[in-house]
Length: 180
Image 1 (cartoon, rainbow, N blue to C red):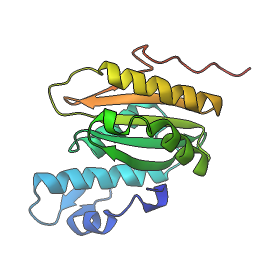
Image 2 (cartoon, rainbow, N blue to C red; image 1 turned 135 degrees about the vertical axis):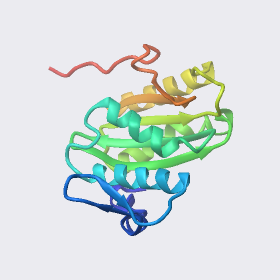
Image 3 (tube, rainbow, N blue to C red; image 1 turned 180 degrees about the vertical axis):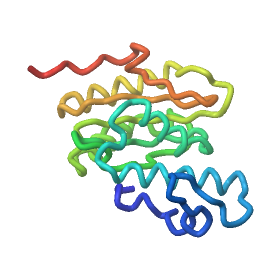
Image 4 (cartoon, helix red, strand yellow; image 1 turned 30 degrees about the vertical axis):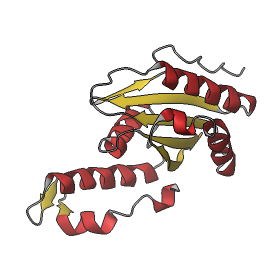
């Protein structure tokens, strides 16, 4: 979804949670766990509109955790440029091997459509798989090689058991070379 389409929850949020003048929110009616999660997504989406949003990697990880926390075996992509997030796209659901052949081309096409300079793929798995498997690393490498020919920076994040693991930070993917 394009960034300007991210705020689909805004009306729900404003009907349930009302901000005070100190930065706190008052709840207008009893809320469920699902309501709180939807509110968190709405707040994150609002933050993405600001220029400073998703500048550091912890913000990106927080965003991915909230967006993907209730989805298993899904793959999504963040498309960024120098100013920040351009788009967030749900790409595939299901086993990695069912879409691995399509993935590099699909990601490259989507990145070029929005003129992204960086792509972060995020794969969420069911609880109990604490680390990326070889298939994650293989697919990440293929996508990185494809995007590298287009001079698009890449990372692959693995989400499981309340953690977000960046394959670049863990040393499974090569870091981009700094341009002089």
